[in-house]
Length: 254
Image 1 (tube, helix red, strand yellow):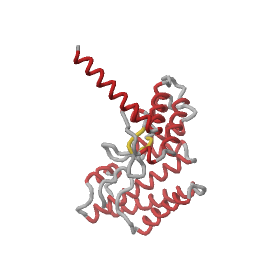
Image 2 (spheres, one colour):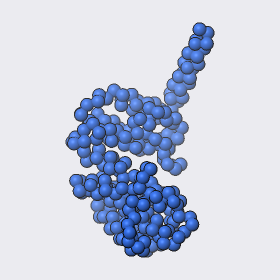
Image 3 (cartoon, one colour):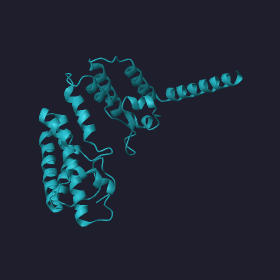
Image 4 (cartoon, helix red, strand yellow):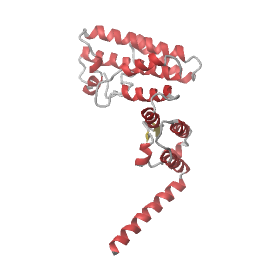
């Protein structure tokens, strides 16, 4: 009996400690509130509450005070709503759009399909443990050819084709540093054509898609567009400042 009481006291102390930590970090409290809101949403075909919560989380992550965000302790319940540890020192936390994917699963033809379907195809086009599949991206563009999501799809296609170009260039040059993981990542896009021909085709497709992004985003942030222009100039000139991969297959260099 004494042992049980001791364990309960320890658990209570841990809860109190976590609460005190959250209290000292307002951003941590806000993330916890997002979790509570999620658990209050009913499992129905009305996905508007999920959409609204995802937008709220997006805004919260985007406007997070860096000094608070970098001190956040993400717990399993945070991952459940799509929060994850960021990549690089400047993005401590990011939103994986898990709630949009859940909304699409609940009601794939809701009034918010443009956004929920986008989240699904972006997830499905990433390699994971298999080769990159670009068909979900093309399927989305067939249904939604215009808008900011479409521009992001074109950018994803451009980045993939650029990486495919780098993989093929590495295969042609037989570089020892060529990442086997990157080759496997794009193996599904390789054909029986000679590598030089495939490399030229990948380069043309990368250029076309980067140009499409710029065409569709004339009013976008100048700094962001400048980044696209640099990528376009590099693939056009075949002179890369950095030969690393830009997509999820970015494991090593060519």
